Length: 169
Image (cartoon, rainbow, N blue to C red; front, side, top):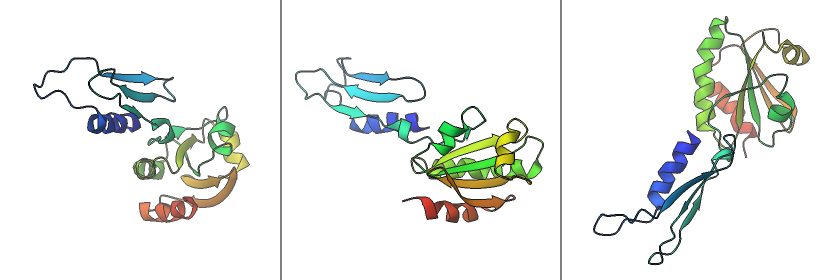
């Protein structure tokens, strides 16, 4: 989704085609970097038009919920500069399935401001034990590697948004 936003922004800022409607085909859309941190640039080598440059920072705005587990917990949550919302869930949990779309919506609305992660308690029981997770769904908010808030159960989106707003600058 973030990369799609970059393409839309590029379309708005890209050099316009000549009045004839025929493009010389020399404008280039460049995607560089690896899949986890793509960079988008537009370069126009035309001598008639100044070279325009638009660089996408979509790696800074992840608008999806990512899976955190015991392998990536430290880098994904504890080492994050942005606040992190972590949902503890399990595939067999009905209320977890109810809150999942809410977490997805929050990830999109707060893209670039917070990071949203999911931890499957069946796959990563040690993380759940370390944070005293006894009931799911449980949502924890971390900032600077510290647990700041805890919400147990399938709560309304407004409740989670209110908590997130406390930690978003």
